[in-house]
Amino acid sequence: MKNLIDSYYRFVAALGRIVQPVDGIPSLLLRLYLVPVFLYAGMNKLNWGSESGLAALTVNPNVIGWFEHSLELPFPTLMAYLAAYTEFFGALLLLIGLATRWISIPLMVTMIVAAVSVHLKNGWLAIASDSGFWATERTVEATERLDKARSILQEHGNYEWLTEHGSIVMLNNGIEFAATYFIMLLALLKLGGGRYVSVDHWLSACCKR
Image (cartoon, rainbow, N blue to C red; front, side, top):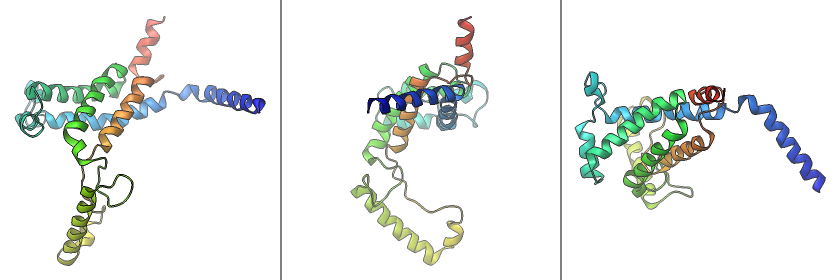
């Protein structure tokens, strides 16, 4: 038995040496997946597209109002700026792999705040479902309403055209996505930017010379 276990771990070690030249790829893929998520989230909080110059980097007053009145967060203006800048500039840092571990921490904090203040009351599921472990009374009722909407559209609308590019679903807006992004950022906190594919790697290599 001991020989079998030793052989297994020698195989695992050998496999690790084989894939070592490409061990930066997982970090790269995690970073590239998260870049548009946080970039668009940050841009949506800023006056990006409606203003020019430095004014484009100011937070939209509607976002500050949402933070204050709907989410009831303390210091709403400060919180809105922190969230917007963390997401926007954090996405740019993830793109090039600079300060990857450092920026992962405030991005994780934004996911915790979003999960607690926005999504937690809706449960886990991002899309409502009437079955499965995470289904709740709320999501069951949501799917019942969705079935009713489908029947109305099938009877009175061009349902085939409406669903040509995808099924109609009911958004539940639970913590599923926020939790997923948090886990991905936690992995980046451990892995860093990745070998050969990040500015962090090359800066580290230069400092060791």
